[in-house]
Length: 236
Image (tube, rainbow, N blue to C red):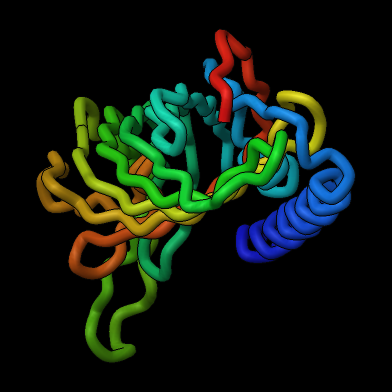
């Protein structure tokens, strides 16, 4: 489900990006003497992939707010703040994770805009922090062989006051589809720095970090709609 949404989102963004590039090429040929300006301000929005996924999967609930502030021609201070709750069923375990998270860092725009364009193809880094709880709902003891019948143990054990710290590498793009209104998509590679785990139970899923894979790595994506609040402009 997540992969299909990501592919669809990126396809739309690349179509919009190509459309704006073609439109700008036509404008450049007829308005070579026009002076353009860079817009500086606060851009705020939300990740719309989470409510879409939640509408099709009752085991997932969450919201993520995003924002960035342009500090120079290509450099942006960026942050994401969210709440996430997820019920996960593995082969021998059923548990849910619930908590909040904050990610902060910078984006660097690698795309050279023409004329009045204000699009981004960026690379960035993030520091992430999550405060959460884990509830072990049920588990099946994994016995060797088939002599023992399968046994499901109702645990309902909650582990509170957990936290995690991690770093991210981010790649993404933002396209201005209307004046000051942007569609965006990004992918991230995550690496755990430290985490507090329950006794005899590993953090398999962390809000903000998402699934914890081998070597404490993780992956994520978002699909955003955001609006730029212009504060001032500078000549290009």
